[in-house]
Image (cartoon, rainbow, N blue to C red; front, side):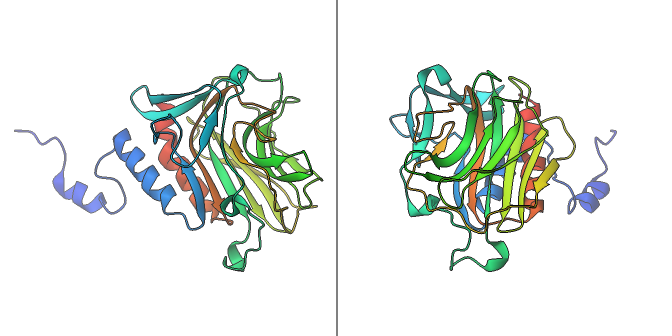
Length: 269
């Protein structure tokens, strides 16, 4: 009987490749990899829900529908901007990322955050993806959003709670299309944006190296997904999945590996 594969070849290549190439294995590796990132503050694959429909670590306001699987592959959250929907965590020391914490090694000071997104209604208002950014009382800290003007990804930090230190990429998402976005901050040195579509082979990165803050304001605002100003402005009309927040500047290969592991999932949706 003819062999379906060469067992000796499989054995020789196993150290370099998964023995299985199905999407379920990508899903499993994605979860394990992200959860083991040093300095991880939160990871929201949007599958975990309590009896009220909230994430185990985030509360929600408005209409956020949990979709168990997109095309039987990956779970996601659907945010309805018309219903002022957003997920949030009350002000907490866990989310107050200053950038020079004494218990964090100085070689990794900073911030990293990102995930997968869809924006359904581009160009109407700015739509926040993740933030701790309360304008009232000058309580801004960090924010990732898609702007209304130009419809581009923008990364914003504040060192005093009032001043916006922003950097916009040239990437403009397409409506109703999954994209990966991650931002990376090295204090006093670099603000960087990574982005890619599910069908891309590699990520693209752009960065700002001037007027980069040394520390961030200790904001009293909520940490939010799909809004800012503690849920009063810039609501996302779209989807999120596999979102993460890290206290610290993780190695760029981690950001790239998350994309490599998760992009096949979203390419199949």
